[in-house]
Length: 620
Image (cartoon, rainbow, N blue to C red; front, side):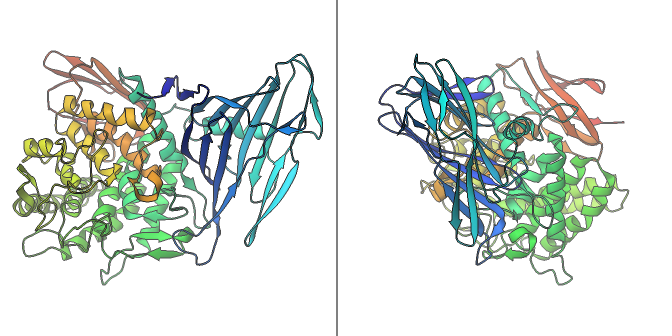
């Protein structure tokens, strides 16, 4: 049973005496990334380590993991001359980490911890109230400098020295942890944290369903997806974060494939700018010889990582860039990105085998698991890239869109011939030639409208061989799991017209990630990197709804198809504050009718769609 409860837009855990807990919570700002490791001990005392990373401060060697990291141990109040950790009453997670602590001197302390939106600082706001009938003496160190290798860090408190708090009195102070030591206005920082990027003039993206937990996790995932954008000398970029210190860098999967295609829907200008910037970074590596693009561009855009060879990165980039360009609704952006997309398609075409499928050295799991010489993931991404690029050509009035659609049809036939197989008793797909065990990425055809082996694939995905109760195992013979394949699968099950099956497993996933033992975001993997809360997975969670339940597929700069997939027990669902296809602040509503779903975009359309049907929407 979960010990967390949903309270409006936050989750809360109340603590009884003797109850312990331990977890970590990721948050980000433009110049600092934070993993807050917190613990409640047996006596109820609170302890935390602020694992702060500064993406613009680089270490040697300046590689993927070279963002400077400093561990801060927050100082405690001295109350009447003694350090008192108190007893934790509750912990709440939202845009902030909030902990309420009762101290022996009958004082209650509330702490709110969060990263600065724009500065190289972490803010620890503290309010303490004297509930006793006697004054209490408060003190805390004013300033402490920490030498962290080649960089000096600062811990600063604005609490007056030897402060006396009268009975019934209340005082607030701030502890600031930074690399520059420059004091900043904590209340302005708090106001900006509560609003950063998510409340533009036309409103914010919001999911509305009958299930509050699902709505809440969408909100958490949305924030985490758009907050993890860092300033670099070469412009802002989204980065995954996590324990691997994946900062001030981009990847063909995390950014180009997972996060960027979602960003136009958010209406967050900084997210769109980061997406466009990441594709521009990749464009610098296009070449006439068609040698592979790097898997990752690191160190603020100054170096690359390509340690796994060709992971199918060109297919990832083409798929993501084409979808981003179309959803942006911006003709100039589409024209700028088309050469990158077309280069990636040509690269893939040159990797076609005699069997008509695309070869790659491995896949995005980088040889952690076998992928053969041709794999299902690379080919499904290439398939979608061909279709989206055909739409991009039409939007830009460029000929030969039909030629790409013919290539997509040929690839679909070839992939069906190569990958279709009976695996462990299921009529589904083998992930690569010679694969004899079930793999979670067999979900990908469902995401792109290929339902030829739908029944067997669904049975395999949710069999005890792959489904572990709250997500998919990577392979049926291994206990490792990566949330990204689970998130793709849930999206695909909605999109293929099985919303009740999708909802059943989505509920299990949400309860585990939002209210379970490690909250409140999707994670990268377990056991790798301590179940890091990478931000790109949060974008994939949101895409379960935009592309799965609502079935939005870009078909032009101002047009898209909607294939609604509403669970039978729901009468209504809506996305509000959407910004895509050249129109800001619009909403889309799904309402169940006897034999289908009514799709409403206020001021644009009001149409009935039969079960498993679709319609095209055109913004004028």
